[in-house]
Length: 631
Image 1 (spheres, rainbow, N blue to C red):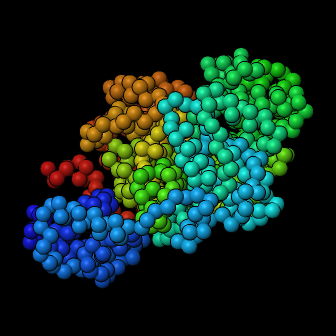
Image 2 (image 1 turned 30 degrees about the horizontal axis):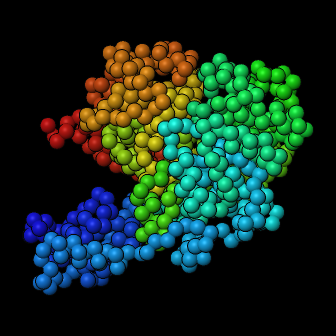
Image 3 (image 1 turned 180 degrees about the vertical axis):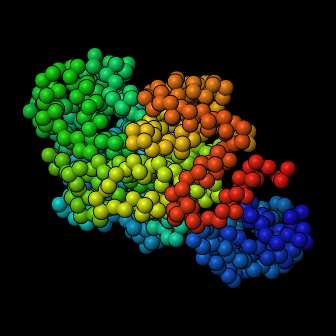
């Protein structure tokens, strides 16, 4: 009521779309005859508000290139007297909300026709005739937004020639993960799920139906093991994260305790997916069955070669003849996968309910862009992926995966820690930041792109411009904590090799050293505002202990994380630069450090993002960081 009676109030901003809260406040504003201005992309909310205000939307401002938010102005009229008590107010608003809200059904095979009538794309093929030849281990948002989506598109284009390529999902048992709950959610939806593609200018909802089952989550992973041995399975694909390949300094570590357990229990119940694969391949060889194609879909350089090295490493310890058979008969094609896919949020679920009128318990919100570049090595067959424009088959994936891992993944790994330290929540906000954005642009042009080398039919500056545009997509709300997660496994894949290549070529490493310093500062556990940083790495305790030590002894970060830095951490130039930045950050902060680096680079002056920003904007941001509030 205080808000409603404030005469100088012109506009209210809501951090979250909470319909009940908004209705209550707008009710009081309406009672005072005030005008409400809302900025939102939620069309259903705008409808509810215009209904609640007994008025109409008299103006609509479409999203500008720099913002995803449209603005709607809802004109209101004074409220007639009569509804005065809190109970009556709540009752009135409840009836209003229930009458205006869309009745939500559930995503199932039986409701597809209703969803299509609401503008949702749905499978047009006969899912009852779909059989499965693919087992995917590691069902998460990325797999569903990428591989499962690609297979669904193939089925839409030519079902008759691809109806054997349905996907059975599976996930390894982990006591602290809600895998069984996720499985139940998909089972209730007949294994279907919604992909919502958003880019700030358009949105498209697509129900995909390429999954036919999600195996029960057994403590001994027996369902997955049995399915690997099933002769109908031709491809076993994996998304087990970049840190899930048991690598030490880039090479398979046969002495890892889990791997040693598998070697000793290969005829029993192996614990890792690789031990299970070796057991399944041994069974197939002994029974005279076809081998498998093993397809790693993780962001690893030469991911097929990596998974092959793991399988051969285990098999050679079990049976030399088996290792030779795997080497001669099992295909592990290298491939490059690309689609930015955040975690699912409650807001995503509510968005589908409000905009499209149905419930999906585990939808995927992602960018429209998707790409898959593969070596065509599938002896037991594959879906006709060549039907899709987003798929390219090549003899050598290396240039494409190198480009993507260095420029995109390296870019993510470089912007996330300064963003977290500055309490920035989302990737698009980091790119819009007056210092983080130019810093990343300068780093890409000065240190990352020079390490990539030529890529057929690709302009690297144009590719970085595309990646920057994708990072700036405000609608998918890609959270900084997701990008920060697992730095101990990501940095040695995405940024440390950049430093290594530059040192070999005699180029500078100041920017990558600064990235490492900001990661170290992040692992100390506090943002620059003093907020706590929650543990965000499987090795967090070790990292935090080392980072706190590095506050007084910077090189401790390099000497104690040899598994991350290897020879790079011992290089005098890198160590000197890292030490410089650690001291700089501790005395002047990350904003000043990034500004210092950006100003020191020459190529940044002519790059697309850099020239789009006024010098004074960055200078003002740096000055504010040094002198908060002008003090």
